[in-house]
Image (cartoon, rainbow, N blue to C red; front, side):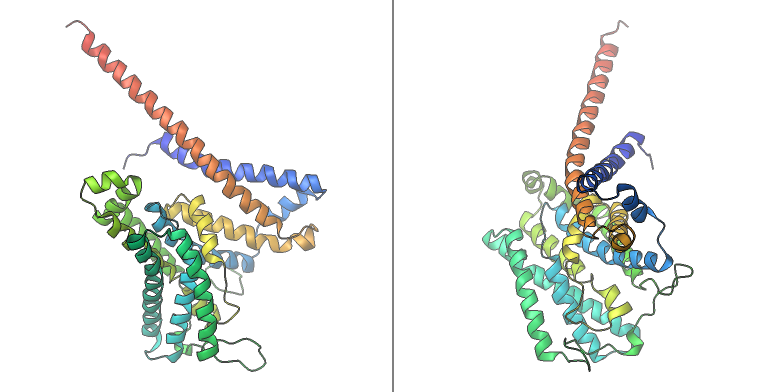
Length: 367
């Protein structure tokens, strides 16, 4: 495989530039309000403790799956804001099924994940159907479906959930002991463990890369996302690609809650993590929809969140400062990608121009 140093440099330039801009903006904000700039960055950049490192990896695992779900839609120039609702209702359905323990051990886990994918895909399919048959923007429909899913899950918990002794919240029936995953002792000296289903995130990333880059469907998906007119002219069923990509995005979104569910929570309750789908949007943008880039972005996002826990105690600064950093990164990354894209385009035009001039000079030379 030939590696183009210029292309690699341009690919890395945008995220590096975005992080640098976020660093400058955050430092200026800290200085403006009189907070200790050096102390804040020391806290954030200090090597995390083993326990915190495990938490960073676990959160990044969840964010990674969410970002891949979003990236599938991005490949078709579709904005699936409904990942949060799709993963919520899919996690509830999977938890409900897994709690009954109809199948033993690992089979119960696999069955629950298949149920989660089915529910997530079906819920996203509503937005897909509205898009291809009625022309309803997926942004509007998925936002509305997020709210509807929250209501349905709340109703489901009241109808089929149970109230643990001493608790004010309701949960689904806890899964059997044989279906609980103890985790992997990946980080030395850490009292907690990395989710076993980090392997699921790895599988999702490999499958995403393979399908997008090595299959006819992936080619059609990228072609349709690049140009609807060109895709239709080459025989691609554009509406079909829209429908499949949204459903596939929802199916992957259904898996978002599985690592934490089987590795930590063991039941779905009102305290189940929310907002992961929206984090996935930022991570997918920062990672440029590439499986490796998304992994790096997920780790960065999770590291910022977990490292901020000590800001209040060690620097006297609110942990909400991380939102400024994350927001600055997102704002800067959009601008940086556009700047880098224009630079790359100009370099390509210059290279083509030089090649044409060299060819004309060769053809015009006397024999």
